[in-house]
Every structure is written in structure tokens, then in C-alpha cells.
Image 1 (cartoon, rainbow, N blue to C red):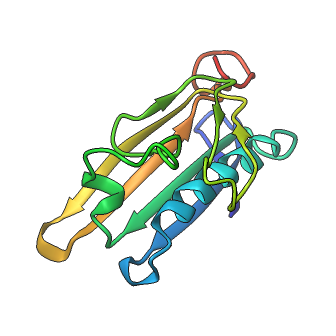
Image 2 (cartoon, rainbow, N blue to C red; image 1 turned 30 degrees about the vertical axis):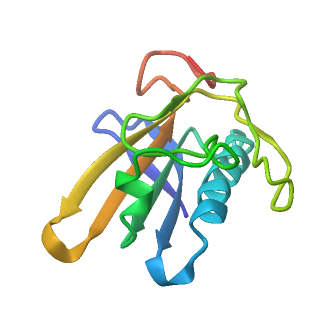
Length: 143
């Protein structure tokens, strides 16, 4: 989704947001985790059309949120609360059957926004640190 933000001084930022909802019944949890990082890498390549970019993921599957650890085969793709990846980190789906390795250009961190009571729904905001003048005066990925 593409949109613009404007502040009271008339400054504008072009924004991109990727929205995901993963249902427990689909049984694709490791593949979905890979797909989130694949989409982040794709959004990073949209720097010519977006100044700010975000991903919002929601799920009714607790495994995305509360799992103690993931298998060594898919553990690179972890966006539980406070997960962080430094720019240039290569993420590998070690079963080899799903997709090629992904290297993110920017620093990436995940933040759990809410958990809605007994409904078992959780939302996670994944952000990678591409700063613009709105954030710190720069305009580069990974600051």
C-alpha cells in the first residue's frame, strides 16, 4: 500500500506499508516467516518511491509470537518481539527447498504491538531503520 504523510510545515513523506495476516489453519508458519523477510527485502528496493516503509503482521497463531525457539533450519526468520538483524545479515532457509538466502540492506527490528485478550490474535510491527529527515536528518538505509 502506498500513501503520503504531510506535517504541519508542508513536508511530505512517501510511505509504503505491507500488511500480512497469517491464520493458524494454513499450516505454513515457517514459510510465512521466510515470506515476511522476502517482502522486507523487496520493500527495501522501493527506496526510489518510498521514504518510509513498514510491515504490519497479524496472526491468530501463537507460534509466531510465543515460541521459545525455532528449528535451526528456519531459525534465521524470527520476528518475535525485539528480534533484531544488522544490515547485511544473510538469512538462510536451511532446508533448501523453499527459497534462496535473503540479505537485508537495512537494520531490522520487530516490535509486538498488542495482544488481544483470549482471542489469540497478536500484531507485530516489523520495521527496518531507514531514516529520513523525519527521523534523524539523513536519508539512507541502515542508519
